[in-house]
Image (cartoon, rainbow, N blue to C red; front, top):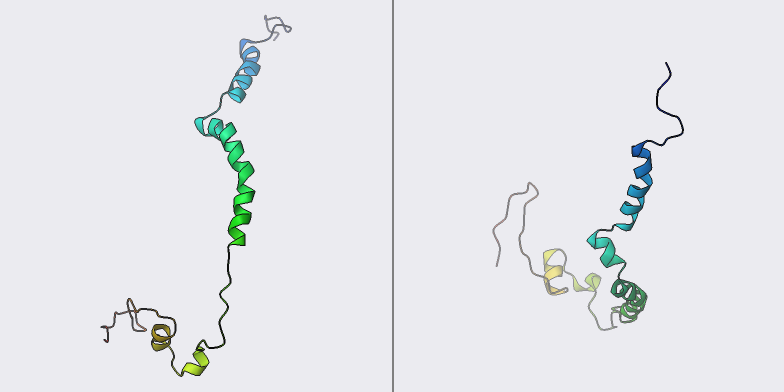
Length: 104
């Protein structure tokens, strides 16, 4: 069966689709507007300079000849952590997971 509407006339839905697409493309969220702002662009331009400066301040900790080594200390486990590394035991647990009372 043939339709009574002329084939050359565009439907109203098709006529408004391109206008809606361009309106959605120009409409941006607050995040998008802030990301594209001149201040954000300037911050991104400075970012590599800040990263390079942070990498230049890194100093590797190299032990000196008079530092005590774990092998020479004769201690191991908790004693090695406390004496050599200056650590502090917060909680000690047995192999089954139950807490062990602290030994001072």
